[in-house]
Image (tube, rainbow, N blue to C red; front, top):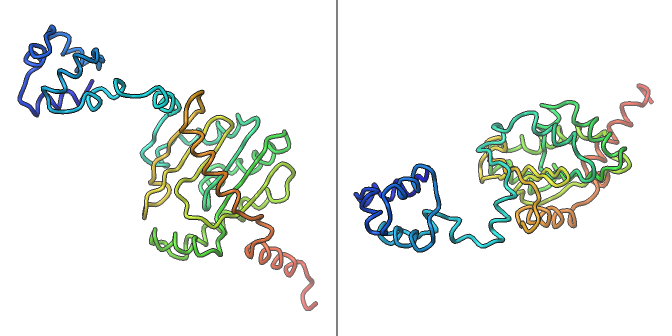
Length: 265
């Protein structure tokens, strides 16, 4: 159903028959445009759009779409209104199928190990099988994470959530094949790459991550969607630093050493 065309005809107070007469075609053709979402020839589309007072590209976007945009659109597998709307198994299915590249870029990504406890051992196993694992998470002691807490009205809870997440992910630190960095950036999108597929949490100002949309992409020849997020990840990667150099890790290591000392020593 072409809802845009149907609405435009109704708003003009016209009928499919009147549109057909203006264009010079059979009324059944216009009905097919509406009910079966059939795309007309460019000349007919422009004539109809002129009558309705809109652009032909509004009624039939594919008529005005360049080849590169078609390729980019083909990269979109699915768009979910919220992260909580994604099938739970999707995350683990993609993780289980990884053979070469696994990237995680987020502030905390606490939901992944909490909802899928097997994810951390699986990531470690993937690294042992030759998968290149790159993890980028927020530095809980940075002003950027403090600001994120203010923006989401969670305040100190954001750095606290990051510290909790880092505790979950800590078994991955120092594992061969895994590079674990902390970033200090404004997080526009959380990026989860699984070889030639991605799940992107598209953050909105002041909105919790689980309420923000998820874009599922699959890399396609000629597409630019996938590469855009690859480049974004690489830019942040250049400025991030190893987790072992962070205040968080040094404090964690110090606390672990203190806990191992005999009482009174």
